[in-house]
Length: 317
Image (cartoon, rainbow, N blue to C red; front, side):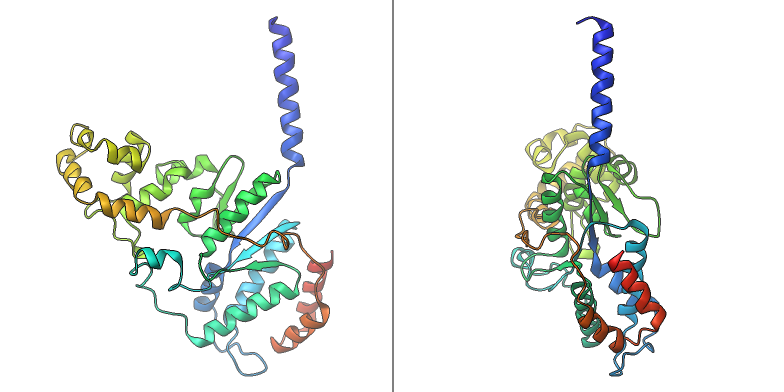
């Protein structure tokens, strides 16, 4: 093909690609529990509803949601919640999983319920599962959204969810920093998004009570993955670890050999299950708000008139 024709073809393909990217929608997936917990710790529990119950977490979370909706005006958005920390499939594989976390007190459970009730009344998709975690639901929704031609914006502060970032997606700790694309994830964590779960399987994750290989941190785990690509490949070539230029290579080889079963188990815990069942019929589309139910909640939460008008403007614009 003549050079000038090849150049013209490349330019046309680039233009078509630009049009396609602009036309693609954005699916916003919110790791909701993190933002409820942040509000619970940051705001005073002297904020009460009309029944005398603390609603600090509700007020903080709904302020976050309102700002997100005002700033981004998403057409597709879903809010994922963790329903149980003791009944997921991961607890069956490894009972100590997340056993280091105290259960939510009744007054916080009450506020979680109000947050979800408000979202549903506002016509916003909210979901949880008694078998899977919010991460898994977000993973399943992300996959479904991409199939429909959408890019995915994951709103969270949880590094585990960086493993879901694909081409054009973003991981975003909203209001606290710049969003990370797949290149940003690589720069921040030293591995590609698809290697995050393997890195955590090797190094462990104290937040989720996953022990990992003793004496092996995330930087060493990243170096191993940069050399071998994956946990499976590393475990099939353990002798090569001792022959590498990694610091303490022989000792590291022994540790990986000794804890290979632990690594394989941990990987089952750290990988997000994108096959988790989701309510595709409900979808992520925003629905008309239930005004009568919202009025009840406005009254319960002592919303002033200005706040009520703001919410109705957000939900009906």
